[in-house]
Amino acid sequence: RYNRNVHIDILVVIDGRFIPIELKYKTRGTDNIAVNGIQYHLKNHGAKDVNCYKYLYDIQRIEEFRDKGDSFIEGYTIFITNETSYKKAPTKKDCVYAAFSLEEGITKTGNMDWSPEASEGTKKGCENPISLTGTYLIHWDNYSCVDTSKEGTFIWTMAKVKATKPSLTP
Image (cartoon, rainbow, N blue to C red; front, side, top):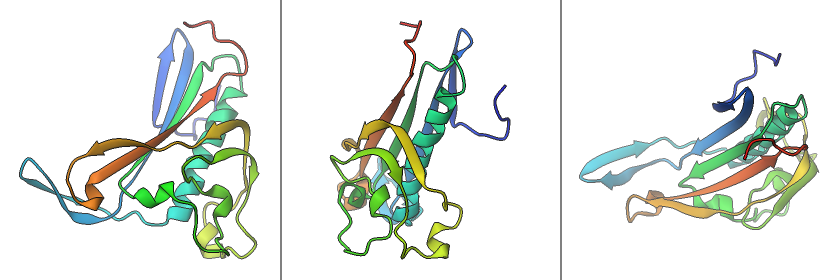
């Protein structure tokens, strides 16, 4: 009864009701991480502006699932990264993605859009504004420190999308 073209990373189903979970894993590129003598090579995902947009878009999508029926229990979006600059507010005065910034302690709710100065190339595939009906506090925690290098520290944040109706599941 839902759009079969929509993808969810993880869908937990309990007695016909569901919990959608969306994951973002964006890394800062490095060849400097070693764990138990094994060298790891992480791809550089860059595009912090688009990655912030996509995380908030995931929250919006889960809110849309919630609003489509009674089968929704709750939903989650989880973002894990070794790029600790996500915790910081943009430093440029003319930052085109300021509305999507995920800095520590910011609350995300309502309508968000690119600044008028954002180029078409920056917005490609992410043109539509984000609109959240819930309120989400962005709080980053340490996830893991797999190496003493700067790139070896991973952080995470999570948003819980609550049901609009009380859940019958404990």
